[in-house]
Image 1 (tube, one colour):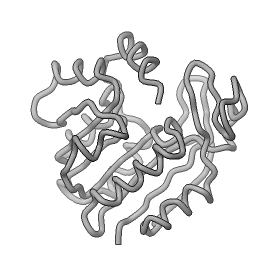
Image 2: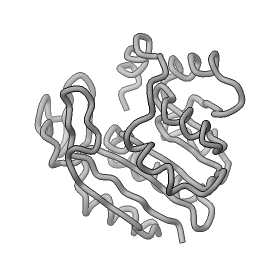
Image 3: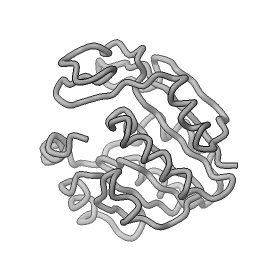
Image 4: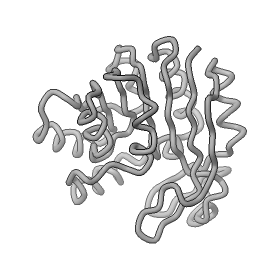
Length: 205
């Protein structure tokens, strides 16, 4: 996790933007008025969107800069907490109906991602849903920058590009059932960036 990079980034980019295309694409799949957790919430744009749709939202990010900024602007929903992936067990004990991670898993090391998935499974209600969107090894920028490890490259910040079958196996080995998976370009277009992303809906039985 590049905490210093993201603190520096959010000193300049702390305004609340429109919700992501991913958030809007899943809104009708959520249980009514669910208890919702966003991992790696960034500027909070998706958290605010889910809260505006009637859900009770908790959200965390490793950047104290952005969380402090969000808490200055916000009321009780969403509830924003400073925590990185390794601190989840000590900071968040709640059980959720939905856990959501957009552009998070590819920002983590393999070990951190495994810890995040284990935490997610253990903090979902039975029948609870996990939604994730991550960059794929089929992404056009895969291989750009300095190679740190296998499938990990650093440009302005570090990314670990995901291989679809590997992440599906990781989820299933923990106990998740895969309800839906798609690996495509054209889903997360932003300005001149059109990444290939893996979108997964996994369910805790």
